[in-house]
Length: 522
Image (cartoon, rainbow, N blue to C red; front, top):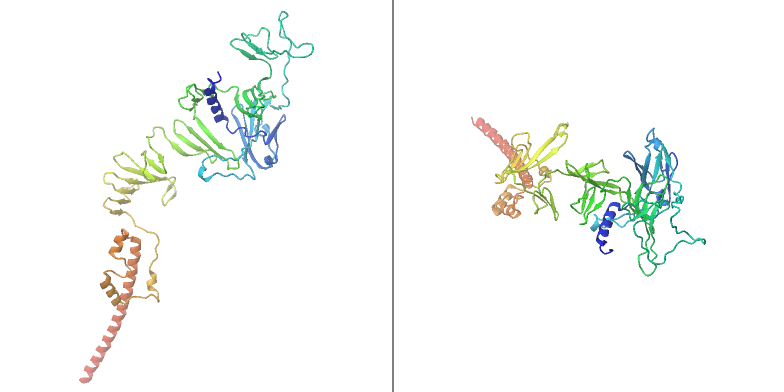
């Protein structure tokens, strides 16, 4: 029997661990709750509790949910009257204290495993229940005492009781009970068992597993199965206690829907369904999801992510920062809409061969639309502004368009011809105004002529062979060099202008002298 059930026990244990991981991380909670008739206060149990920032979470009937953050050292108190003039509805409420930051803790993650959890200890803030009855909070002061009850036996029944010496009935050997067995103070002599084989019947229902192993390294942990809290105002629940560790790793509250947790014989886990089709299958009438909450108890910054899906999309929600939805997938999306493979990203392709690899089967080509939401270019806040980056497959050209105008703003053909509607502006380059400095050495024209004769190109300008070796012409660089030559040419022109003026002055002087000589001869 034990071997036959081993596989099912392992599956159930894994399912339980997945649902309750992180609830009880150490034996002693950092806070203790004290309930009065109008409030509940939380007392720090350690100095670490006083220095920690915590969140108080309370949930209860009629979808009541309360969350409040308390700074380190701040008095932690909850008063229902401060929330509603009429108080809270009657019923059982649960509270939990989550550690949001811990001073003195230096968390770290290995750079090689940055996506994995660290080994920083995870302290438990504290948790419990209280009840509101007729508008007042009921304090869970004492444990419910076992009910000895009166005699449940008829006069003709044979009853085995303690003997006069006060010893209990002891059976040394095996015991076989045919039919059913009732244990507890409230069992009746005419108990109607129905289909029950064993029944526990009294006001405190517990089954305790006390392992007395002491030899070697045999397991010796004690466990307890508990039905309902024995505290005034406690929960109606079924739970399993780790008695030796002082923890309760598994609890099911009364009223939980049917099939809240269902393990199929093949090992699939169903949450809300008896027919899971994958290892974990969650079913809900409205947006089934999974919450991933890092609560700060290990010193890392608190962060909450939700992974969920409904008829509008599958999405990831950043619940900590305004519940934004940074990632969505719409129903009906094509296969390989987005693929990440060995550092490459593919859009429409299963095996991307570059950092971004986009593939399409549309005859009209491929278009990337960029939208500036709520702002028209040059007009300030206003309507959306759309731009398109288009690769057309009929000629292989690439264009950048404003879809609301006719024609491409920029188009690069497969022949290498670039067409622009506007101007082309390059990054700021050094403008060769230094040519006009007084200390600039301007080559004499005869040296320039000698250089051209010797090398076949202007001095300071790379030759055709150099550009061929570079693989092309740097237009920005060439533009600066050409401007330098234009400025030098301007200086040469000005020099020639000075020379011409001087020559004209000399010519004018000679003409005056000639005219004077002619006049004198007459």
